[in-house]
Amino acid sequence: MRATIYLVFATLCYFAFFAVFLYFVGFLAGLPFMPGHIDKGPVASPGVAILIDLALVAMFGIQHSVMARKPFKQALTRVVPQPLERSVYVLASSLVLLAVMLLWHPLPGVVWQIEAQGLRMTVWGIFVFGISMVFLSTWLIDHFELFGLSQPWREMRRKPAQPPRFRTPLFYRFVRHPLYLGFLIALWAAPTMSAGHVLFAFGMTAYIFIGARLEERDLAGQFGETYRQYQREVGFLVHGAGRRG
Ligand SMILES: C[S@@+](CC[C@H](N)C(=O)[O-])C[C@H]1O[C@@H](n2cnc3c(N)ncnc32)[C@H](O)[C@@H]1O
Image 1 (cartoon, rainbow, N blue to C red):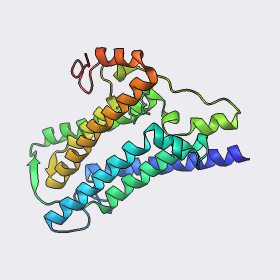
Image 2: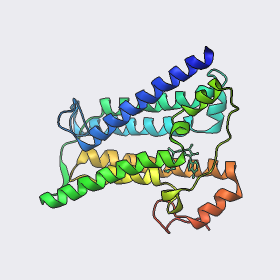
Image 3: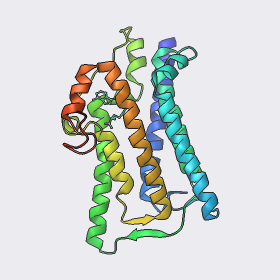
Image 4: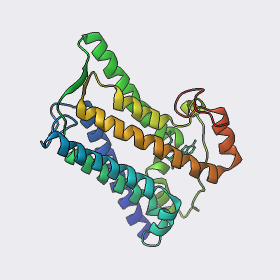
């Protein structure tokens, strides 16, 4: 019964994540039918809007970075059952991302606008490619493990917890962070780029670089020489660039 409740909770967290992820795609794309998006939302003077938006991005970065670290996970499992630790992280991340999007204050002003229809469509194609790369990368690592469903499923089937596995399929043979690369592509591939969109893209780009460095420190600790060898052979975000000697 307890294991079933865990699985139900984890499934709810998973669908919450999925809904927020879809909303994020629409937010970033500025879909006009959305109640709010990167260029539509609460109005404030530019100075106030910038401060609020920077605080939101910082909140996202801090929550992600702190909750993903081992000491926090260990502390969390003192109050949350081990099989639900990942689901709680997924739920917290989804809620924080939702808050960022709902509280986001658009900034007026266009930084660039592509006029040619063909070129606009090409940039939209690149955006879709970036989002697809994010989604596909989750499956390459282990989608259900990453989003906290495998853990309670194993508990229900009375299987032992599995240690993390290091994987390098497909994209991971060319760059160490394809999922983050997909995000970066989607953040910057905009046919019309507003000042607010640039602020969001800059903030998230900074977080991605910091987050990836922290993640690599953990991965090197977990997988030792195997990961350090991978760092020497495979580029950081671009094939052949950012290898660590
Ligand atoms: C949101 S994913 C991002 C993965 C990677 N940074 C990327 O951009 O593709 C973060 C999780 O993936 C795990 N991870 C990163 N690289 C991995 C690899 N090559 N094999 C298995 N797990 C990996 C990390 O330990 C972390 O739990």
